[in-house]
Length: 256
Image (tube, rainbow, N blue to C red; front, side):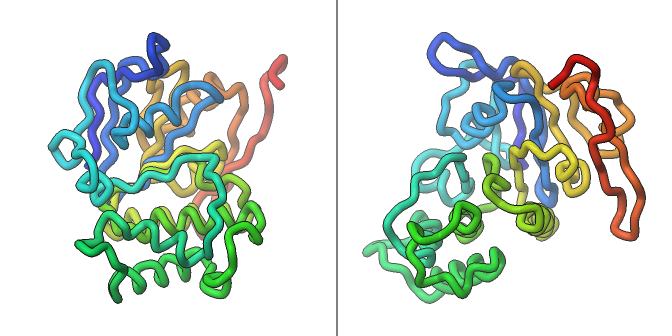
């Protein structure tokens, strides 16, 4: 479980996250949404321990965020905008296992099996020997997500993991993240697709101007009016055999 209590964080004197509290439970996919520049990425960095908090408290399973390799074993963080390394897809995914290696830091059978499973989960098994530089943007993103999954960490933090993916890829990824959460991990991700967040998240945190203006289930969020107030859009839904499907039904006058 990841717990934040009245967290403040930012860059230098610029405060970006101001007094935010939430609990991301194990067995739960928590999705963070909000307008651009509202502090979503900053919040993930604060949770991961990459960006120091200026006030408040972040705990992982009831303890302060560990440092160094211990943190990397417990928390797997995927930032946005990754540079493309000159290596094969399989070698990239294996990088996720590095914090778990004992001296002399050589990959073993378990590490290669974890990497292979992650490749298969992301539909990349046939591209394992391909170089990252030869892949499309969407396939590169799949590889980075596979690396994050291969860590075997209890807590996954992903910043815009749906970037560069086509419609089918976005849906498949959100289904996978929900499945990983239901398998025992806590998964927290930032995405821009409000409709996908509503369909696949167990809990949603809506941020605006560095604060949490809503935290709860998609059903509660749908009836709260928060989406309309924060994003300036109206959200509709229809019921299907797979549950509710959400869609943007209108944009407030004057919004673009």
